[in-house]
Amino acid sequence: MELDTGNTAWILASAALVLLMTPGLAFFYGGMTRSKSVLNMMMMSFGAMGVVGIIYVLWGYSMSFGPDAFGEGKAGLFGNPFHYWALHGLMPDDDAANGFANSLLGANGVPSLVAVGFQLTFAIITVALISGAIADRVKFSTWLVFTGVWVTLAYFPLAHMVWGGGFLSGNPGGLAAKLFGLNDDGTTAVAPIDFAGGTVVHINAGVAGLVLAIIIGKRKGFGKEPMKPHNLTLVMLGAALLWFGWFGFNAGSAGAANGAAGLAWVNTTVATCGAMVGWLIIEKLRDGHATTLGAASGVVAGLVAITPAAGNLTPVGSIILGVVAGGVCAMAVSLKYKLGYDDSLDVVGVHLVGGLIGTIGIGFLATGTGLFYGGGIKQLIVQIVIALAAVVISGVVTTVIGLVLKSTMGWRIATEDEVEGIDVVVHGEQAYDFETSGSGHGVLSASLSKSTAPSEVNA
Amino acid sequence: MKLITAVIKPFKLDEVRAALLAFGVQGMTVSESSGYGRQRGHTEVYRGAEYTVELLPKVRLEILVDDADGDDVVDVIVRAARTGKIGDGKVWAVPVENVVRVRTGERGTEAL
Image (tube, rainbow over the protein chains, first blue to last red):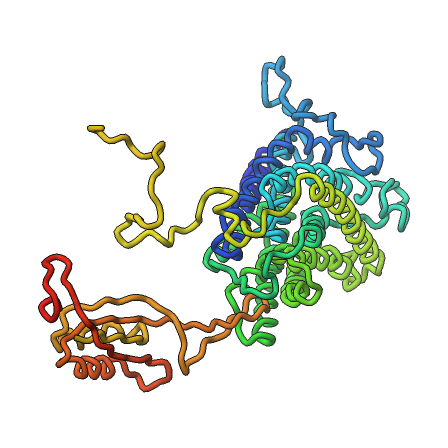
């Protein structure tokens, strides 16, 4: 296969788009927290970038897309972490006269190193998504350790199972092949569909958020004290950045600059429009107001739902999926008050519920194989099975990691620190300087310590 | 001397200030404040969770005047601040024992 510069350029651009989603998420989540904890919320996203980005090139890519640890071609649970350790084997041959022209090429004539960059950004955003469920109350050190352990034990294996030819892929040795058998040519009769990460990213992060919210416990005052979003303009900015970045996520997942990418782009847009409208309609009917936070949340719910389906639906099917996702997620975010878990920023209500709607919705709406398109019920069953498998895998792994960290490092900051505000206590900073007087002096609230004050000239 | 305190609707501040200036009041202290009286707060809904906001934003004026002007200044404020709708606020006056101008040390009505 020859290097395809068009495809390569698009995947490079997509990788940058997806990386932008994580700072976007920091704004989206940060605006929803109280003003005393916005910096910690943003730092959970940026911290995930630091840890996961490093791990990804060391063993993450190898565990996700390397040869199966159970044997080359087997439909196993994770890739061999040492095969492409530190991207060994993907770098250009040093002895070759033409240098990078010799880079290992992956699918569609895109160098594997470009695929590494693209996939790295997915791992980062998935881990960062979880942070919204445990806002305002978690030790930063424990969070950083969790990001590294969880991405290794939950994300890379699931990515391998779904996208790397593992247990939940269309591999003839995989789960779907066991359900409905093989075609005459040896391929899986009904292959699971997860275009850009309904299972790997959203169900995975949503379940992890739910498990951690339960293990870590509620914020002090949850359900009694008001905990309303402190800055909805930040939330809107974050939603806008997420939507923009998501074009890399979904249209980039076509793997090429072609019509399939175009279909994913259009489906991503119309599903998101539908979900925003769906969310606002539910709010208007139920609460009397169509809210800004509802619009931003509907946007994200739609983006989540269309993620696994973007390559396999018609635009009309995408609109239907989006409206359903927006409406259902608008109702699902109230579950935490009834069931009593403090999923602070609704990772469960948006990402788990939206991810399930998208992944299972494929079974109804996929062109050709979906129930509504005359494809029978087999695709629907396969989609339900891989969604449930993702729920179980993520649930079990996250429970183990969460409990071990609880009994070793501990998750919670002290209650009085939580009340005072995690920003000041954990990071030594305040997001907003409310005390400074109009003159900008702020003499009542702060003075420079000796070490930072400029020494007096005539001392 | 009297201290006149007025709690009014924020958007009425400019009109009240202009009216007081026309009357001859030379200075005042203004601060943003919040509270409620007969006008109650409102509700807000975030992702279906309802919050009742009890306190409403108001502006608080404090003005020191000579005894003889007390009633007139109160009338000026009330006329300028009134919309006729609930939530217009309140104005009250209390006697003041002494006032000192910090710069000069003048006391009593000289310091007004």
